[in-house]
Length: 360
Image 1 (cartoon, one colour):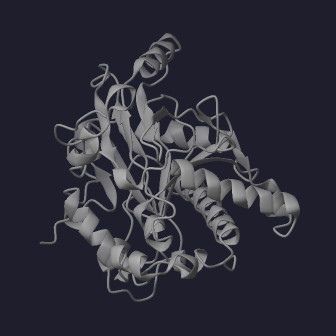
Image 2 (image 1 turned 180 degrees about the horizontal axis):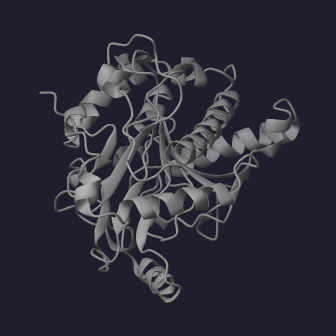
């Protein structure tokens, strides 16, 4: 990873050590306008520099994020026996609930050892102290060579609003990712649908996490150990409890602060693949920090739940599509590093590496 580090940080992408939100309204109104083209370039430059992006999407009101977080707080606050009814280990946990201490971050020891001082990462010592729930979003293919990633949904018993809330939030997140994928394509000089064609009928998953801050609220507790995402683009609404840290391409560490009403996106391995490494899958971790503890104290004073929820959706390339560097990035070197590979095969390989897959 360190060989790809760039020792430049775009001032437009960053201001006062914070990510600057990109408003996508102009692109939604008229993708051919100068303002829209500028926004596309901002999206690309920010992802190239930071592997992360904060957007304002006028189609996603903050209230919808709140409704989703409220539901997930209630869900994860249930007794463990109730939650375990929703676990599907036989599907590599790719639908329904994943219990705490099951997801193991990939071993990135060599990268972690090169980060020190203010940029140091927490060394994962085992599986993550977080629950997760996977819910399919979007259409699925009629036939696929990767049925495990496209199985029927798990619906928890005690939440009549479950499907409506999950589908509404999931569709909003997928729509936002789709727009950003169009903006990336435009910025690199490709047709608008160059990336969205790859995503069509992909195994997109709404994947909120639940971290019990009452049980695991000690400073430096790891909820998501140092890792990158293996999908195309990941998106989240603002969490009620801070704790997400990212590493920029120059190896510097940054605590992410998402303004109200904004959405956070992260580049995954599939985006790195199709851009031949022009955009990289950024490393990140979620840990209990001083700001998390302050947020817990505020929540307790207001008698609110102290589960840290992430309203996350993973946007994927369709399982049966081939991952390969797109034309502007296709050359001998990039094809060697990112050989043509079925997206479903790449996903299976990554799942095995993080201890979620039951296939040998």
